[in-house]
Image (cartoon, rainbow, N blue to C red; front, top):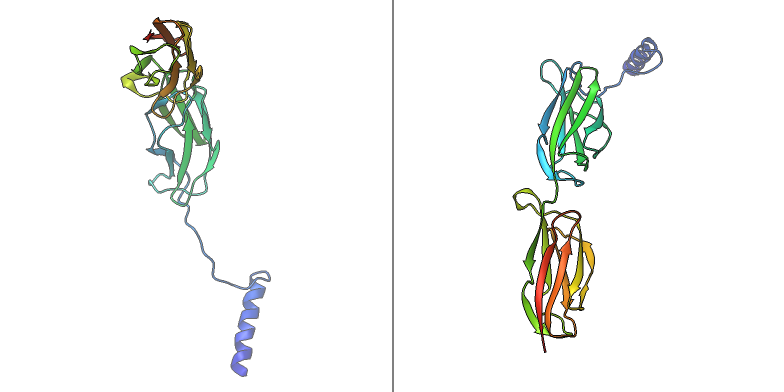
Length: 230
């Protein structure tokens, strides 16, 4: 009993010395020193279609003067040029000092820039290149022959590409019958993940040449001929 009273008195004395709070074990997370710079871990100088997200996330790291990651640092992230968006616009570094961002490119320029700032003089600038549609390519369906007033065996397929034949996704394409009086369905739509859109063409009711034209924005139109037989 005497030993128990002695232990209780020791705890009470500790409590009084600490302003009424007992001494308890605590977990302390090291945060590093003062943030000295923001380094780019990944995501700089990517190339993507204008208006679409970069394929790899942006990863930055806030470090102190010794190169150690600094946790719980708030970075303000803004698009400097290009007109795109970044998510989140405000990010907090994790226990390794890292920040992860998603950058969707705009359509205002080819070269686009992002700036992440922790404090004055502590920031990182990243660049990306936006690519745009350059060509409409006829992938399938040209020069077919079919009976009048019937659908052609093969669908018409066009592909919209950018530099190096990169497929352009979600690009509007329109089809118009200009010779023969037939019909094409759909008359318009957007390209899929391959940069393609397909349409079914029903020839006109008179034997002879038929012609459909595919257009996309200001790109050169693509004529697609066919022949209707009796």
